[in-house]
Image (cartoon, rainbow, N blue to C red; front, side):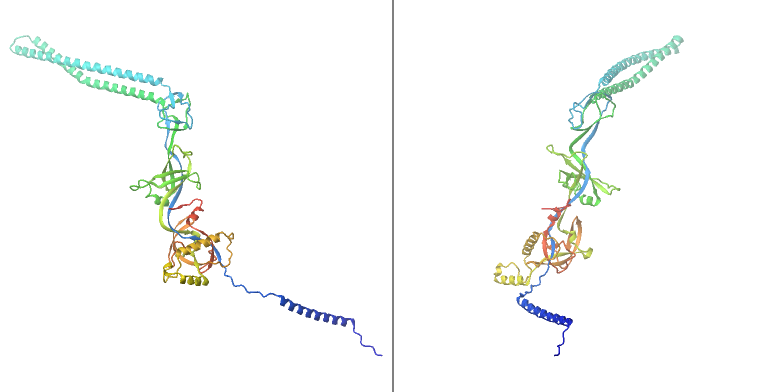
Length: 520
C-alpha cells in the first residue's frame, strides 16, 4: 500500500496564515459596511464671514478752548525789609516779635533809647532861640544906624553952610586961614562918619539874612530831631505778617540795620515763564492790550496733575523776551480771601493753567487714527453696510409705509444719518460689553460695518488729538466713526465690528494734563 505525500510543517503554517488573512479581510469588510450604515450624515455649514474688531472715535464739530501751561514761584505784591533810620540801643520790643505774628501800623516793633535824641532836640531849640535874639539885635542896630546917619546928614549940611560962608569971608580977607582949615577938617570928619554909617547900614541886612538862615537851619534841625524821636519807635509801614526777624532786645542798631521782613500775603504775584509761541497766543488777551479786554483766568495747583487750588488773573506781560531761555514772562495776580482755608503763600512753586484762545467749529480726531503724512494723510471711516436680506426687508417695509410717514427723500438711497448714528452707537455699546479685546476675527454680526478711506488735511496738534479737514470727494462728516485700532489689519472695504466708541470729551478726560477744554 503506497503512502500519501506528507505535508511539511512549514507549508502547513503558510497555508494557515493565508487562511487567517483572508478571514480577517472579510471580517473587516463586513464590519466597515456595518459601521457605514450606522454613520450619521454630516451637513455642511454655511461659510462665515470673519469681521475685524476695531475701536472707533465719533467725529464732532465743537468749540475748544486751549489751555496754556507754565510754572512759577509766588511772591508777595508787598514785601519790605523794615530797617532802623536812627542809631540807638533797643530797650524794648513787641511782645510777640516772632515769625508769623500779624502786625498793624499802630504796633511798635522796637523802641530805641531816646536820650541822645532828646538832647539833640534841646540843642536845636536853643540854636533857634539864639538866632531869633541875634535877628532882633541886628534889626535894632539897623534902626539906630539909620537914626545916626540921619543926624550926621543934618550936621554935615550945617557944617557945609558954615564952610561956604567962611570961604566967602576969606575971599574978602575977613577971618583967619586957621579957622577956615578947621572948618574944612570938621566937615571932612562928618563926611567920613556918614560913609561909615552908610556902609554899616548896608551890611546889616546881610547880617540879618545870615541870622535868619541860621535860625532856619536850627529850626530844621529841631524838626529833624523830632522826626528822629518818632523814628526811635520802629513801626511797620503797612499791615502784614512778620516773615523774618533780625534783632533782639539790647542790640545796638545803626541807620540801615534790618529789623524785620514784613509780608502782606493778601495779594500775590506769580511770574510765569512761557514759550514764545504760547505768548503770541496770549499777546492780544493780556489785560490792557486792547480796550475792554477781560483778563484771562489762571488756575494754579501744587503740581502738574493736581486739582485747581487757587484762582487768579493774567495782568501783564514782559515787553522783552529772554534770549537765553527763549521765554517771555507773564504776570498773574492771586488774591487770598480772608476766609480761605489754604491761602497761597509767597515762595510757593506752583503750576499754572491759563485760559487761552477759543477755537471755533473744529474737528479733532486721535493722532494715531491718521495714516500717512502730508498730502497722503487719510483716516478709515467705519460706516454701516446693509445685507441683501436687510435691504429686501427694508424695501418691503417701506412699501407698506404711507408716503407721508417716510423720512427718506425720494431718489435718495442713503439711510437717515441720525438712525445710522443711533444704530452705530448701540452696536458699539453692545460690543463694549464684551470682555474680549483681542484683535482676533469675530463671526459676522447682524449689523455689518465697512471701512471707507477718507483723505484729510491735518492742522494743529493738541496732545493726542489733531485737527483735520476732508480733502477728497468723500467728505468727513459730523457723526462719522473713525477707526482707531487695528489700522494695520484693515483697508478700504474691510468688514469690521465695532468694539468700543469714544469721543473728544472721553479722549481729553484720559489725559493727565489736558491742554484743551470743550466749550459748552
